[in-house]
Length: 220
Image (tube, rainbow, N blue to C red; front, side, top):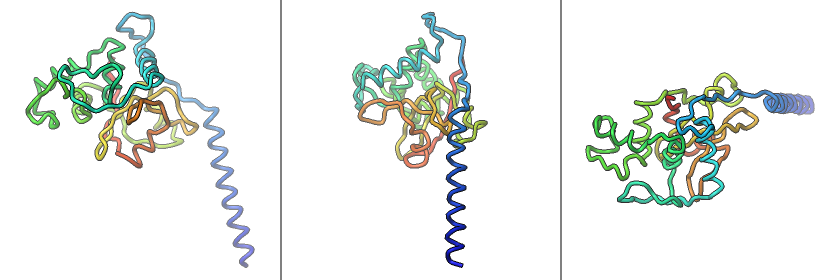
């Protein structure tokens, strides 16, 4: 009887392994089509999504230093940045001035921005994740924050240049990459120290560090 139970357990484990392996192999052949845009705000013959991803990847190669600091002139030096700098710098490469847009919205709707605490400071407000999340809730398209491995219908809603924000204990933000793992889950481009990187951390961050609270797509 004991040997039969062991044999049954072995076959159950074998079936589960074969199924999982088959799913992974199948996923490697199936692809989620990346969305694109025909907009080219800076008129450089590169569409805005590719512009943004190209710039973000260049910063990954440059290994820009992570440094959280206050700068009286607002923008940090080119060789320093935190996670929010990934977003505004990437948008800036497509000629979208996120700082000015956020400063104006904070000024005109200060009660919406709890992190500002009724004391707007253009030198730092646009570099704080809670403020960025509030702004995107108001001005961008809000998308699902549900993330399901192997579920193509769910994961095709996660597209390149979407912006994702994470809650406490470690407020964070990242750009969704056009690169995906074998389970169709996209990579993220972000900076959580010591330097920016493009990696397969979307699910890991959500399940082990801080929950996703926002998923947004810029209104082109």
